[in-house]
Every structure is written in C-alpha cells, then in structure tokens.
Length: 313
Image (cartoon, rainbow, N blue to C red; front, top):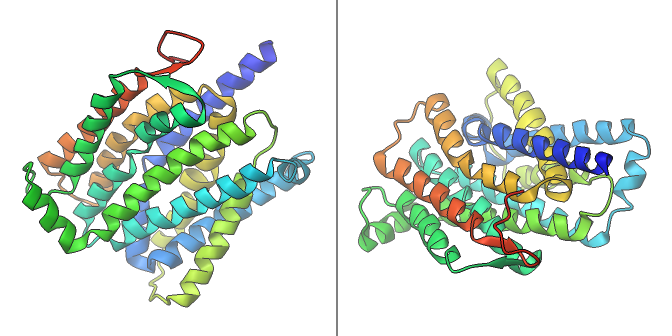
C-alpha cells in the first residue's frame, strides 16, 4: 500500500513539473517558428525529443516490451490525439500574424484544463453539479475576450477580428479539446498499466512533421541561439513534460494536477511577454483570469460518483 501511495505522489510531482515546463512552450515555440518556419521548427523539436525518449525506453528494463504491451486503444487513439494536438498548436503559434496574437492563441489553448475536467464526466464517469455551467461560461468568456483586439465585449469586434485571421484561434481551440480528450482517455485506457508510449508518440509526431516540412518547404536561418532553443524545447517542455504529464494522468492525483494546470496560462503569458518582448493588453490579462477562474469553478463542480465531496485529490 505504501508503494502505491508513493508512486501516486511521485507521479503527481512529475505532473506539476510538466506544468512549469509547459509555461515556457509558447515563447520558445514562437521564437523558433519565426526563425525556422512552423514545420521545420516543430519537426526538429519532436524528432529530437522522440530520439531522447526512445534512448530512455531502451535503457529501461523491458522498456520497449512494456510499451508495446499497452492497450491498442491507448497506442492508436491517444497517439492520434497527441499528434493532432501538436500539429494544431504549432500551426496556431506559427500562423499568428504577430506576437500579440500568439498570446491570444496561448490563452485559448489553455482552455484545456477546464475541458479536461468537463470531459472527465462522460469519459471517467465523474459527476458534475450545476455550478459547472457558470464555470464553463466564464472560461469561454475568456476565450471570447482573448480574440477581441479592442478589449470590448462586442459581437462586431469578435466577428471582425475572426475575419482578419481566424485560423490560429480555431486551431488553438481544437488543440485544447484534443488535449482534454488525451488526458482523460490515457487514464481510461491505460491507467492500470505499466510503461508508457510518449517517446513513440513524440517520434511519430516528428516524422509526420518532417514529411509536412518537405511538402511545404520553408526558408530557415540557423544561429547558435536556435540550437540552444531547440535543445531546450526538445528536452524540457517536450520530452520531459509530456512524459511526466502522461505518468501523472495515468498514476497521479489527476484532479490536483489538472487544477494546478489552471495557472499555466498565467505563467505562459508572463514568460511569453518577457521573452518575446510583448506588452500584454488589459483585455488579455482579464481573459487569462476568466479562463483560470472558470477552470477553478469547474474543478469544484466535479465529483466522484461514489462521493458527495469535491475531488480534491
């Protein structure tokens, strides 16, 4: 019993580290896509992280064997969601017409903690109460405000901004949904198993992005800074963060980790504004706060069906 509790706590700590690493993703991703192109930057990041991950798998006792003993639904279903999320996120960041829209896109992407909790109701058979509704409304109000350049609640402003460059917003929203699905389905399909397939997911994602890079050639400008950023992105926010998150979702305290992940957009905005030298407008800070508050309300609105207390694990 003690071993089980220890494993749960360790997995939870790893999930928290993943959140910290992910706070730097948007800033470094935008810097790399500006210099290398969307597919070139993302393909190198995921190929390198996939290589690190496979080396790690090979070094572990029966690492490869345990990976391919995982349920086929997890390998295929979660693998497809992982790849879809990655492509959507990097396209959203790379296709944003300026660095300010990158901040907006990041806020929309970070709807995923709330979406993870909402989806846990049908997928993990959790129970929700009525306060879930205002939580969802607040979170999506943050989504709305992040896409309005004027910072005013105006349908015309929302429509006009979407007509200018709506594609990154849609991609970021699809990324948020797919990661919410991934987080729940990994628990549903592989929560009882040992081993993990994240290194394989990373490598396959890198191969697919490399194919896209050759289909859509890009002009790249290499510098020592790019090499450093690539190494950082491939190791910390990619290989380690995804591996840690997968472990936390399958073995850790999923609600606690998902709850702490609510603050990822705030961490991301602070790091992105400093690293990319962007002055964040008031409406974006408010949008970030709405997403966080909405997700927190969602957290206290989700229960285990066997209990009548909020899931605070």
